[in-house]
Image (cartoon, rainbow, N blue to C red; front, side):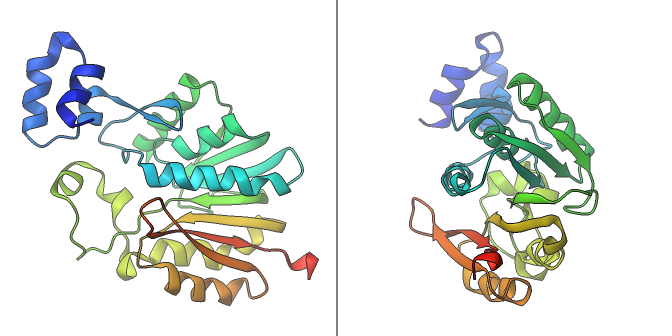
Length: 240
């Protein structure tokens, strides 16, 4: 479905002409309509949060499958939650307690509205990734900013979606580095870390993860387009 069809189907017919002008001006149709479907749930979105993407649905699907090995209820935290799409979907799909963190007050406001809309009980924290947390978790999940500042991206993304949720230092890797070097103290024995990553970042991150999870099973998995897109670190030290 192209953007015009999407607007006709999901937009407000009373504001169609005005909304069509916004679309022609380069604004994403999801922001114009004000919501988007993700994994069968509907989420409010605006320019304070990233628009959820198919690749992230893939991350959620893989976590749901891998989570089967954990006894219920599972304790999960979503770092850099944005719209809350990952946290809320996992909460709806799994028997779990769910925490979610974001540094942006504006993003948290949207995430809380989405949790209420989808009737998902989530504890939200404002802060930078792991810093506001005091618990330990079975699963730590994150889709952090991973685009390098000099990387070419689509104009519609560059001009509309929040920079804080797109770009990261150290060639787009700094957020992963920060999470990985501190994650051990927040991860339960035999826990798992799950990340969405840039398609060229898998090998670098796999090697970096070994510094902190030397005995863990570390794997890079592909998205539906065949690109490296997910990093999983399964800390199964007790089984070795």
